[in-house]
Image 1 (tube, one colour):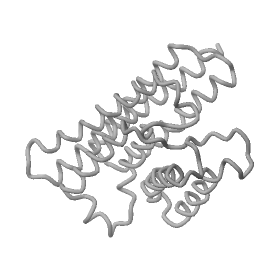
Image 2 (cartoon, helix red, strand yellow):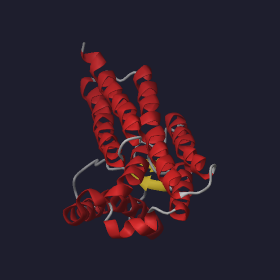
Image 3 (tube, rainbow, N blue to C red):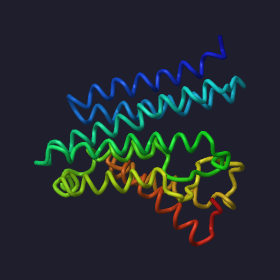
Length: 226
């Protein structure tokens, strides 16, 4: 029975994505909560598979299929609803579907790329989903700027492209817990903790932006070979 535990957790991720999609049509806040839950299950399915030593090809494929729903279709539909509420155009809202398309492309590339074990090429789909669905938690004073037709379209385009961009981003995997070689990881964790302390759930989009920014800074400065 143990060999089925990771796949059961992956299916729980998928359930969160499906229920989150349903919630998009009622309230945007609940959709973000289901993304958070999906992230937890997404972490523990791989973690459990490694601990129990029951990794399998079908588990890898199932994981990607669940991620397409939870971290691709769900944020795509959330963006669809936001653009729909702000735009006078009948067709502009369909641009949000690019988030789902590029999420699927990102996951497909990840599955065949053996060089993404210690770093990522492009923004991971869970991070992208956390950023998009977390926008509703930003301070209310920023909503008049972010939740506009132009801003939402720009966010859609930029973050869709970041999913497949040839940009190296560090992974939060520690080979050891010393400072040397983990400077960027510890800096990111410290900054993330501070942002969560001050902004609570509203920190999530800021944390994702910090993740991208710190990765690029480390790459350019040579501090971290990601």
